[in-house]
Image (cartoon, rainbow, N blue to C red):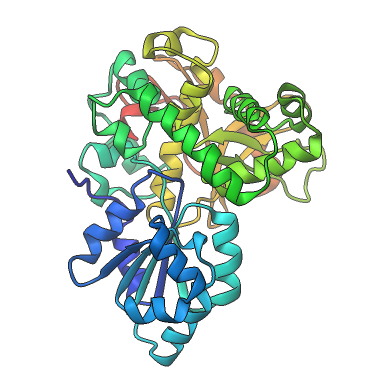
Length: 405
């Protein structure tokens, strides 16, 4: 069953403007399914997961290009960077848009090689797991989330129950899990972690101790929604701090984690400068931290952090799947004042708080006033929570049901 994705129109738009299109993202988020659906029968499909085709691509890229001429879809391009100069030569001799569609699961290697070989010739988009709107069949109409009065006034909806919401969070957003209720969650994610460790990590860097990396992966999952603390994570995995720093980069490059940077300008110097770490799939985070059911996850110590992680992921998808960089930051100063998310659009600050409550009050937005010191316009704000309907908390801040995401 194919689920329409929000990113379809940005893909077609970029393919109509550039001779090469690259879609990056973690394994199993649906890159191949999406592009094969959009490419139809006329676009040849070749995957470099096939050892014979990979060997041909690496040993004789010129022959590979003759065998698979444009229009072509080449899957997992990071395995054969030798192809990129030949793709460049092919598109330079014919600048027709949409000739080659590429996918890549390792952004670090892919982006480095693509930026060197295909600069000015490639449109790049990033794909995450399914958003809630996509699961509900409304992916084609999903817009980048930005608080606004019209949005709030039309925000009432049938929100999921607490049990339904945490079931979605516990299972995660990989299409194979989110769409197939019969899929055994632990079997799927155990296989995912093993494949990730045995293939992608080894390709990205020489991880000598896979068990230490698995401990590090679990330490990162346990800290989703928290400030990135390299020293603590290194201690938990029993590795050197420099190793921990390198491994965080691997998690980023593989599309598994997102680092939310702090917002600051020259007005204030007393800001916390560490990013916050978020797992991009809450099901994977819950699996790595060994929550055995949605019920135990909802009632456990990670309940609030995993909800915050899920909300941020949904907001992030609404921007990235529209082909836009998410202008997301958080605020925290040395006095302990914190705002979960700032969306900075056209010089205006839009503050958001995430709360596991069905009845938020004004205390939830007590720190929004600190934004005045930046001297920038402050737009509408929201408390995204478990309320059943959107209601105003102040003149410029509304409570918003998670079901509206």
